[in-house]
Image (cartoon, rainbow, N blue to C red; front, side):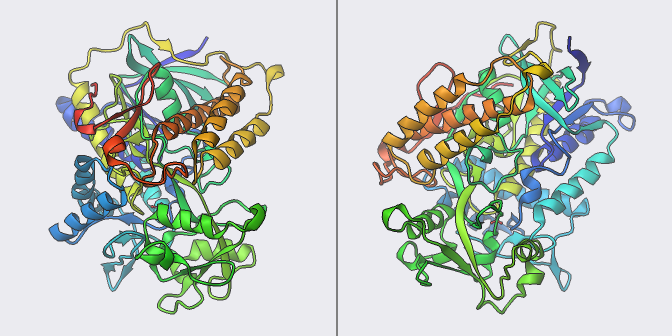
Length: 550
Ligand code: SIN
């Protein structure tokens, strides 16, 4: 029997979106919900994370946070850049919210002590791909996500009604008559707990582990999307997986991110002959949109008879910054592998980085299920369209995390209290020790299938084969067990299937989704977002006309 616990709000994930939302729920909630007890206590907020509090995609974000801090013209240009990068598919309302509310949220971070890099007291701004001006704030050179994460964590820790629960996996959503009323948790020691709550926010990040090549940490297993899917929520735009062009490519070494800010500071890309090649692909050269650069690197790396040729990042000519000072984290990692940005060509290759699709939400984080909210990478507001503008994701987490908290508090005032007929929507049985298995081999097979058949360059034949392979892998995972590794593998299979299904349905090329068999963009047929709902074929929709629930 699972222990039963009650709280007001559950936030799944402790990255930038989850922590910003928790702060809003707890602190603003103290004002909004309990005016008579303001100073005493706000709503109880439980933040749950699978590992330590500093293990999320947020902490790995190097380059920075894009934000238009210098007035209206900058905001308008940031909007244009976001829309242009998204290749005809950005939900303009969401993008407007992002760029307009971004400065307020970043001011708030500054008040909370986030230490962005400065020169002569002024915030330093850099540029990345597809930005029309320098507007990217960074911290400690290349540790922006970690600095923001730590300052949010400090702030959250000082709020007594926030409980931060580490090393605890959220395994399922609890649902009663289609309404979400809590979560099931699995502790590191195998303890199972049922948490009942008035609303649940998914802020559980991305799913990079679905691919064999990824910049994401091991925790990025698409749990939020898969849980929401099992509970019946609608999922949008999963065919759009952004591949970062430059991950370090050394045999036997993790695909460490080499920030786009390196190219922002002037680094070149060179092919195996030593030639710069980006002029053949885009007028913005190395600062072209990410999908263009990633495909260009893939093509330059294709040698005869399937041989992969090296592609290099070259910073040796850059003298305006000292790479060791401007990029201390990257320089340190490279030094551990005998490489120096000032001296060496650095081998690179694309790697899965960011999922533009996810649980469909409106600009308030509301999903298609009552009392279920989502914010950050797990969500799909349509803000990134088919290709995310560099460094827009930390801003997304802040802006939409804060908004989701406001919406949850607003809905809470009308809430009826949860019933006691809550159902677990998926696996439920704790796995006995003698049934434990190692799932790393099927995980590697899944990742290989996805990389080779549903990666940067796709076609119907490969995607259909991937579909079959994922189905047969799915039948090999035991149902109804509570084991973190098995749950993560099951979640990744679900995400893989969603990616493959939507990629098959989108018979065109746009943004991060490239079909060799349909190489052109087709606005007439596919100028809309893809949608997958349980038991239905993939359809296409406009955000403006989509329904949400509260
Ligand atoms: C980078 O530093 O290149 C990553 C930033 C991002 O993904 O937006």
